[in-house]
Length: 433
Image 1: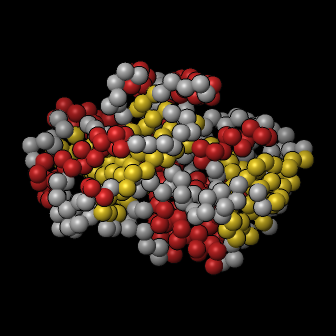
Image 2: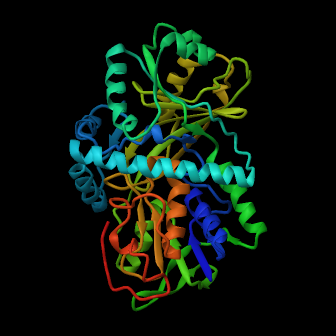
Image 3: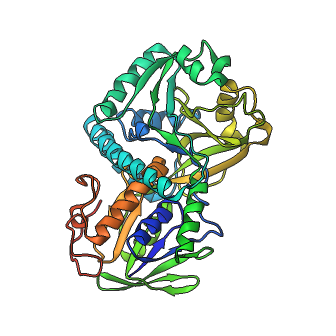
C-alpha cells in the first residue's frame, strides 16, 4: 500500500514515519527546497501539554478589540479585505465562552499528553538529537495576584493529570541562575516538570532522513496544484512534477490546507495566524539560560536550543502575509534582554515570521470527511510541535481501522472513528469540523 503525504513540516513527516511503521510505502511532497521551512522552523520549540489552554477564551474578544488601537497586545487583529478572515473570526468568537474554552482546553490537553508519549517512544527508538531539554518549562508571573490567578487556572489541567509546582522567586533563581538580575521583578511561577523542549526543524529533518533510509521518497521543490477525483475517491494529486498516485492521501499542509481543500469542495476552518521569533546565538553558556520560560505578563517565550536561544511572541490575525520588519521584534527582544542581559549576542538575532494554522476551537482537523481515501491532519495552531506525534499516530491508527488509545470524541468526527470503511472503501458520509 502506498501513502502520499502532502506537506513536509513536523506534522507531515511524523505522519509519514508512523505510516511507514505500519508497512506503507510513503512519499512526502513539499513545495520548499528543504523540509520544515514553515511553522516547524521558527516556533518556540516547546513540547508543552502544560500550555494547552486555548486562545479562544472569554478574554480574547476584548484583547482583539484593544489591538485595533493598541500595538502591544499579544493577540493582534488587522483589518483586511479577505472575507475568510471575518467568517473565521466569527467562528472563533463563538468559541470564546467559558464552557467551550474549558471543554476545548481539556480535549487539547488529552491530545497533547498522548502526543508527548508518542514522541518519547520515537526518541527512544530512533535516538534523534534535536537540542532536547527535559527539565520542564517555567511559566512565571510578575505579580503575586497574577501568580495566584495563574495557579487557579492551572488547576483545570492539574485535575486532568498535569503535574504542576508553584514556586517562588528564590526557587526560580536557584533553578535558573541566569535570572538573578531579575530578582524583585518576578513574583513566582508555575513549573510543569514534565514539559520539554527541542528544535522541531532539527527533529523533523532527522526523522525524514530515517524515513528516506527505510525506502521513503521525499520530493521537495514540488508544488501541489490540485486533485484528480473520481466520485468520492482521489485518483491522483496534481503537482508541478506531474500526477502522483497512491492508495491513501494525507493532507498536512498547515495554513495552506484550506486553499487546496477548496479545490475539491471541502471547507476547512483554518486560518493563518502570524507568529514572530528571534533565534539568537549564545556567547557564554555559563551566563545563558538553561530553563525554558514563558513570561506570562508579556507572553514572550524563551527557549534554550543548544548554542542559541529562541524568543517567540505575538499572534497576529494578518492573513497570508509573512512579511516582517525590525520594529516587529523590538518588544520581545527588549523583554529577553531585560531577563538575560549577559551571554547572548542580541546584535546577531535572526528574525523570522511564520503562519500558525489555527482553527476556531484550537483543535486540529483530523480524520476524513466526504472522500474515502483523503485523510486530514492539519490545523494544529500554536502547539503543532506538541500535538504532531499524537495526531500522526491517530491518523495511522484510523487508516488501519484500529481504535487509538485515547478517546476521540470531540477530537475526530464520528465518520473517522467508525473503524471502517477503511481508506480503500466507499463512504458517502460527510461531517464538517
